[in-house]
Image 1 (cartoon, chains in turn blue, green):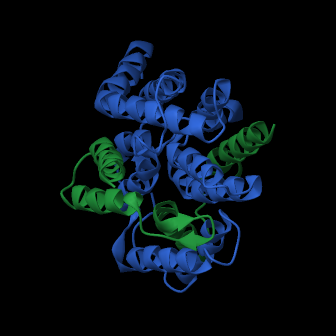
Image 2: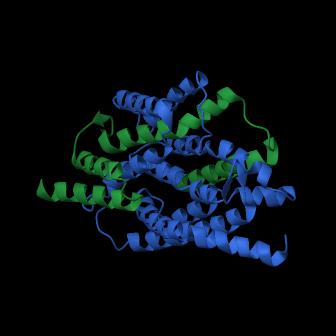
Image 3: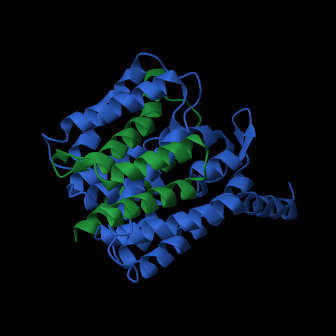
Length: 228
Length: 101
């Protein structure tokens, strides 16, 4: 493949992802605003987005903190949520070539959306589409977070604006895209039940982490489809 | 200080998790049982987060303006509204419920 063709494919990736990038940027604004409320004001939210680049985990950590959860619970919730990047990383691994540093760096550009658009079908991924789409999303996410972090200080009381209700709504929307098959529904309902049952007995944040034991039901029956 | 520890640990773990497949495990698949467990982590944790974020107030379970927001969000999700629309509708509903109350 020629060099020009490669750069074309990278640009294609950026073009295909553009509508998603707009949504991701707006999402980043939301994150910047909510993170500020959770004590991640100023540069903190921006550095978080630039180093972690995984929206749902960042929202999870922030929401646990703002609900009064401990640092350990916030970290555990975010890291557990990101373990899905193990199978996602595995799925793109055969399509990434070149030296280790390059493969490792490109793997960082994998998020749900860039992963989806670079899929060519049959488990094959286009690394150039991934590069173009991933870089575009990364810039949108970090820029959005910066804007939200700055704009957040201009907003009033987050509760008056209903921003605390934005978290559960966001997780619900994300959940809708993550539930696959009956076992996924069972896991979600089980996780919700365990978390609700534990709320009166343990400090904030712990119910979410403890609910993760429910996914051990996956030991009994592996899913038919690859996870995302 | 705590916030920087959170950012550093979550950032480092995420980079490691994303790089694990391409760098360490290569093209080999995870053992089937483990894959089954990992696949269910996201739905389980997201559902747990929804419940605690919407109904927990410290160590108490309460039904307040956030629940109204979540109800509207559920309808919006069922109608396949974009994520941002879902979030904005939920926030607006909770804000309205508080303003009325």
